[in-house]
Amino acid sequence: MHADHVARILDAHGADLSWQEATYRHLHAHPELSAMEEATAAAIVERLRAIGGYEIHEGVGGHGVVAVLRNGEGPSALFRADIDALPVAEATGAEYASTARGRSREGQESAVMHACGHDLHIVAGLGAAAIMAATRERWSGTYIALFQPAEETASGARAMVEDGLADIVGRPDACFGQHVVPGPAGQVRSAAGPVLAGCDTISIDLRGRAAHGSMPQTSVDPTYLAAAIVLRLQGIVGREISPHDFAVVSVGTLASGHSNNTIPGTARIVLSIRFYDTAVRETLIAAIERVVRGECAASGAAEPVFGYSDHGEVTDNDPGLYARVRPVFDRVLGEDSADCSPWTASEDFSDIPRALGSPYVYWMVGATPRAQWAAAAAAGRELEDVPANHMATFLPDYAPTAASATTAAAAVALGVLDAR
Image (tube, rainbow, N blue to C red; front, side, top):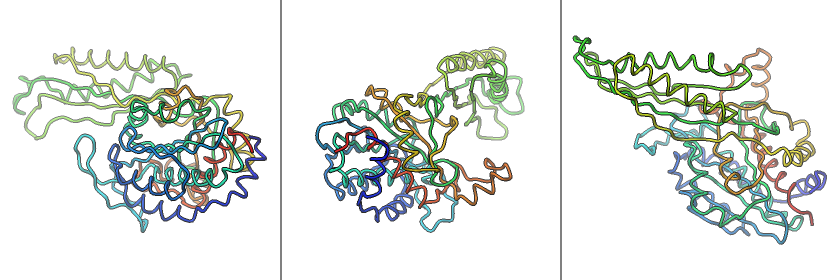
């Protein structure tokens, strides 16, 4: 559908979106951890039923929800929103701030917060679903609203695929997704090619020999070993990866011992790697295993045990589909349609279109109050002064962010569907 036609439909869509902010505040105040999103999914289904017209599939891949609006012959477009929250204690001071607590998939209890903005993703996805239902006389084809659990553990997209997603949606002609990020609230940033890094979580279990703290000579100290490994890991990117390539190795967990006078027998390191190229991934993994095994041998420790999880593919926007989407963004959003540079965070969104054999486009939506962003940018302190995703102080500027995210989601779908 031509961008001008999309703009005319959106200018007169007539959908009731008055419920969005109240729904957002409710979801923000009642977050749920990955794979635990039962009440969140129920709220999504309730709103979809109120919108009407959708064939609703619940419990797909856990607490996933898929809503299908069949509207005659024509192409199909899928829009995905993620729905899980994080084990973060909120510090935004908002009147609707979360005080919830939850238990993770590992059984650990914690505070819970929508510190990544998935609550806003949900209301934008629901808002787009309402617009698509309200404008069905203006387009033909099939619109699919997908609400995915467990994005933060990089497992929800794959779980939905393995639970028969293709039987519900077939092979969409296009798949779309978005994420709120630091930036001028309501600005939509997009690009062709890689826009999010691939990632892996690597756990490393080290096995030494315990001893009394007064007799270190009888031990094989895994704490000392772990410290040496962490330092050596930092040299991989600087000395083994080309300066022209992107790579990150970050140690997120270093656990060893429980008392001041006992040298423990084991230690555990959990790290994440990021990359835009699978060849770089292979280099990183080989180097990490070599360094760890070498340090274990140098310390006289047993062979380490490696575990790999939470793999995310590079999010690599299809150039052909992007060439159709970007003019729609430019026409509908005007100056708020901008270019983006690759983001170093990772997502499992692309597991869905990859499995379905569909092209996809994923974009970013700025969520920072514009005055705050402008002041930070003028001082060159965006990274220091602007709350970012996963921080306890991250809270999107609701009105402009939700408006652009909702409009963008509906606009790209209309852009690939047939006009009536």
